[in-house]
Length: 197
Image 1: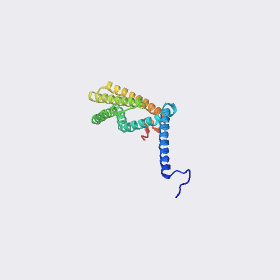
Image 2: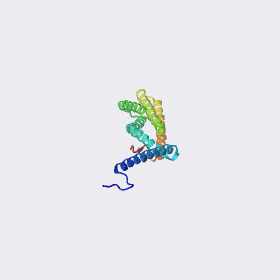
Image 3: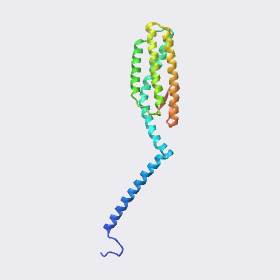
């Protein structure tokens, strides 16, 4: 067939088309990189980009700490009940107290190994303080029963009050953090239930 004037052969058109696509791809990539670079300097865009990573860090922390909380809360309730029983003249079970102290020690070690970002640091420190207070109360309870010491019972009650105060402070810190990052939670009064995903 005869070629028409001004019309290029099919092979040259394909090469030019591929070259144009390649150049447009490079140009688009450079524009995207420039947008990301400039966007990271813009406070609104930077806030949006970092908000998701902060939420992921919070969820990772909450997922790890939730299993520790579920072990700690029954022990704390049992310790409070133990104090009330002993105050009324009934002896408490020292074996269960020893087992609970070992669990609290284990929880302390596990909580130390949980990485805490700046968003959850206050809550994490307060959780470790809760563990310390409940452990101190248990030590005083054990001493009170072994030595029939009324002063140790008073000390244990003080530690349990400090534990409850610290637990309230921690709930407030958790609520504040969850409201700030719009994480749904349920306030059960003595503790907070939340999603970990």
